[in-house]
Length: 151
Image 1: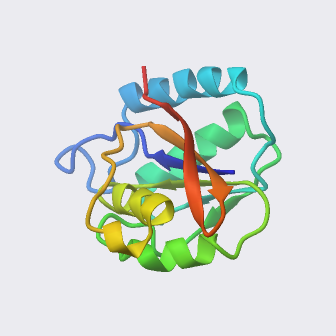
Image 2: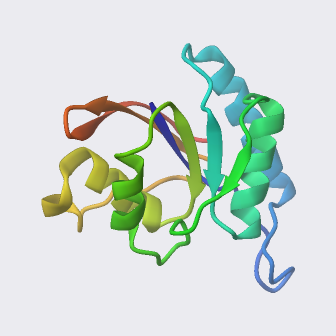
């Protein structure tokens, strides 16, 4: 299973150019952790995140809130304007469950690539902040299993 997760709400660039999570964003992750606890399934072997602060902080809160044994892994290619086909190719070769914390529009296009393949790569699924999309292997592609929208 792959869990694609958009970072939670962050402060504006004017407040802090590094854009850490806001109080609202930390609360969103707390609520999502509560919802994830209700979902049956294995724990991801790692939590990949982009190098941006709001993604790293979301990943850290998920690790502390629910996926305690999953290490955080900085993954290149998850920033907002990166080409998601590179991450899609890597995910296709990975074994075991993974959580991937990133940004829009990257995650939306990535989810389309994984579910529909490269011919539908220009179509994307819009991720809400702190949203989680669970995908399971389905032959050469992936199947959407469930979606959590942040409360």
